Image (spheres, rainbow, N blue to C red):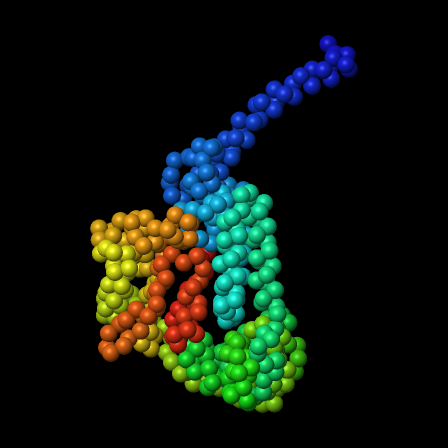
Length: 388
């Protein structure tokens, strides 16, 4: 039997609220499931749980949301909001990558670091996810602008000789690379430029990590062929952007590997005789700092030329997580300014014994990136690979 059109319309309209009532619980269940910390194996969080209770599953349902920091230690509103929103977590990872790139190029001066601390406070003062997202957008834009601005305190043009270790080929540009260890330990030997006593020239020489050359140019083809196993290049380079230098004039290129000033860093593994004294020195300092005996879970231990870098996680004497609320870090913990228990330390061998030069527990940024410049340690020994 066919219903009159008017009755059919009334029937459909009457059904709509019922459909809405059926769909709503399903949506609530999906939102609740999105807050489960499947990686940690925790029980499903109720729909009323705060964002900090556990990392939520991402929109594609492929696993827990992954930020650039440890979501298990998230405390501030900004951090917990990021850990509950896949899109915000992606922005956080983008920001961390931009920060890492600036660090690798030596562009994290005191002003940039101070601005980052101010920004973190502004992000954590937000009271809505939209505010957090806007904060990330603005900061990411600012960091990218830093990467593109020429350094006004550095010389724009340098003339001299550059010792190249290797060459990388791209579609439009080739990259002349220096030995990172040599560059950190003996920059003047690797980059020999005129007017080094001029502060602007010295600053410029210190900012060069590699040289770019147009791949299709005659110079590019010549360098690609000559520098496969290292070479020395005589010519003029210009600053194209902050920390980015382009070879503008090539006078001479001499094939042959540049002599290395130092050996590469060595990973100090279990059984290495250097490991015990390094960890003993670090444990003593951390035990005093935390006011209790500690053991160390070692993520990374690296040594080079009398310098060592450690990435560790302190534990109690019986191997349990530290209760930071019972340490001098209690206020940082309560304020959400302690990013987990990850601890980074720089050590130096002095008088035949290892001494801790600097350490940072639970940093919310890559504080150790400035240590080579600040303490004279090799850059390569303190490099830490970005998390996948």
